[in-house]
Length: 271
View 1 (tube, one colour):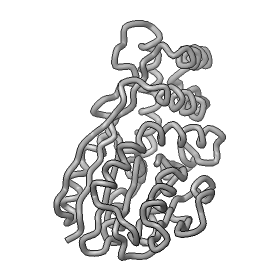
View 2 (view 1 turned 120 degrees about the vertical axis):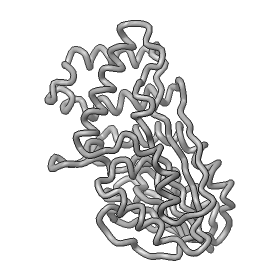
View 3 (view 1 turned 60 degrees about the vertical axis):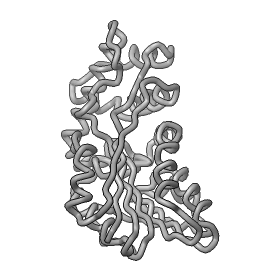
View 4 (view 1 turned 90 degrees about the vertical axis):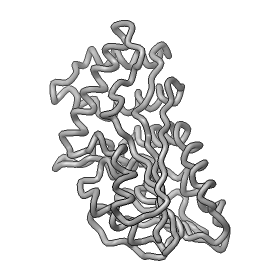
């Protein structure tokens, strides 16, 4: 998801919709926070000219364009999402953009050297089917990299809760997590990924985790996220208008030392 549109849904649609105006702001902030970690892992897996890559739940274009640069004119990058309005801006050359729901649709093609999903599966209703589709799309020897959040392991957005501003931030984060859980998100999914990759038959499975303790990009991400879910927080009785306005003012002030949930990166190879 790159934090894509493949985010927790019920009959009301996706909680964090690509079509909303804040989506582009969120994509940029997520890229600033997590692209260096993602790119480090992909480089270590040996990405080279001519590789065929599938970016699942592409969301914004940053990972897609980086992959295209690495695979060169003889490679291929397939970017898929249920809402391709942002990823489609990168279409052309070796980049193909496809409307695709990884939790419901069959894999588009197979024989990929590399498949990647970031901040996607935690939100997909049929995670098991999605993971099976990605593994099945790999060529023998191909790599799968799954990077997903584990909010249950670190639920706070302000680790240092020393005053009322920080307490309010954590209250609103708890409310946001409640909205996610109500829509089927697995808030402990990240920790399961290494085991799930092994159970799917992958070898050489390895994992690590990353989360910033404070960052200007965290402030940007939080403000955009709260604005995006504001009405739902209020409708669910999880926050008031006044509390949200007060929190957004605190975020703007830069006093909060905001963090994120840990992003667990796990990778393995198809035998």
